[in-house]
Each structure stands twice: as C-alpha cells, then as structure tokens.
Image 1: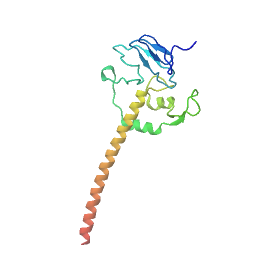
Image 2 (image 1 turned 120 degrees about the vertical axis):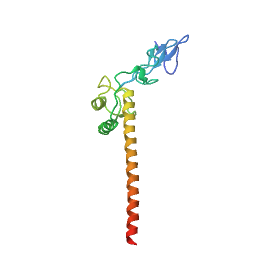
Image 3 (image 1 turned 45 degrees about the horizontal axis):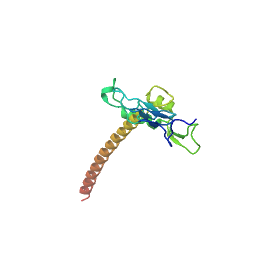
Image 4 (image 1 turned 120 degrees about the horizontal axis):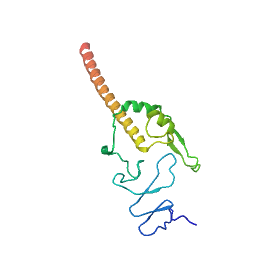
Length: 169
C-alpha cells in the first residue's frame, strides 16, 4: 500500500498538507528534523510557547531574549581560536549516495571545543550560528585594530620621511 503522501504526489484530504510521507492537519507545520541525520519531516502543532518548529532553526531560530535565562557574554577571540583549531572535513553520511558531500566538523569535536548543546552526537544549528557570528566579530575587531595600527605606522613613516628630508637640506 502506498504511503499517504509523498513529495512528488500528495493525496492528503480536506485541509491537510503533505509532510514527507504523512499528512499534517489544519494548523500544523511541517518541520524538518535537525541533527546529524535529519530523517523525514514531521508534523508539529504550534503553541503559544512554541509558535514555530522546535529549536533547530527550521523554519525559524528561536532567539528572543525573553525566552532565555542564564545569559553570559563570550570572549569572541577565544571562540575564534577554537574555530581555528577545530578539525573540518568533507564527508558523507552512510545513507547518502556516493556523489553527495558535506563539509563541517564532527559533533564530538564541536562539543569538545565549545561545550554547547546536549550531546556529542550532533550539534544544534543555532550553536553553529553563534560560533560563526562570534568568530566574525572577533575577525572584524582584529581588522579594525590592524587598520588603526597601519594608519599609525603610515603617519609615523611620513613624519620620519619629512624629518629625513629636512636633515638632508
């Protein structure tokens, strides 16, 4: 017997929408599972507390400060240093066809480097976003410092040249 619906040909009835191989009811969202092996999408019933798909950023990363506790600043340069030391590889999941490639860290290395999330078998995309943004901020700050240093050295060089040309006369 055929599945109730599929990506190619949905057969859901009366207000239902196709979600992978199941039908979501009216008002439900079809959510992609997030993690190291995504799997089939699932139907999710939104609530006031959870109006979008569960954490994992599909379709929206929940990041409102009003739903967070124990907020602590990070040392962006330390995050950047950990990113620089993080082993990255290309790879494919055992279930992927041979021509499919992915790029990224192993979950165990990510967990060891940053201590984020709740497992060493996967990492949440919101954590990867945070690590990326912290690294970008650290790099921006470093570029700003280098630009300031370069301007200072150029001004100093110009003064030395001016003094040198005055001495020659």
